Figure (spheres, rainbow, N blue to C red):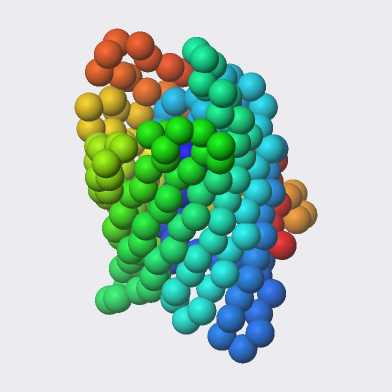
Length: 219
């Protein structure tokens, strides 16, 4: 499931589209990533194995929509092998505070509908130049097949020398656990390389901790 990646992590989508080609007020961009472990809200989605990910984003005067996908592996008899997310919303700025409101649908093609679910979200972010601080709330959308719980998270991002960026995240996934992520990223030309430590303290006591390396690009 896509954290608004969680390179949806240190910033909310005030600038949702980057590296985009623009025609008038319309923008389009694509992103690709290779990660050593696909982790969402502190939980591995690829059975602690590498994942290839990518997406396309469209934007128009603050409105945005996109699609994003990744290979997944849950084990324990679950045969899902792909995740496909569709999302859309509106992002802007008011009195120096960025906001982002939208919804995301998490889908697993050719799997039981009980695996699929959606969330609405609302986020705020403030850039203090030396550091950006954000907060985001996700509200699970109930269906006949699934009643997802809500989640909230706070984020911090700060630029460092040598084109490094530090990011940190702490969140609470209702009835699941508290999750966290701290990391460093570095720009290398058209690519971005990152290392992060992430984990979750689950209410069930089955905790996870992971060290992750990721290389990504957008165009």
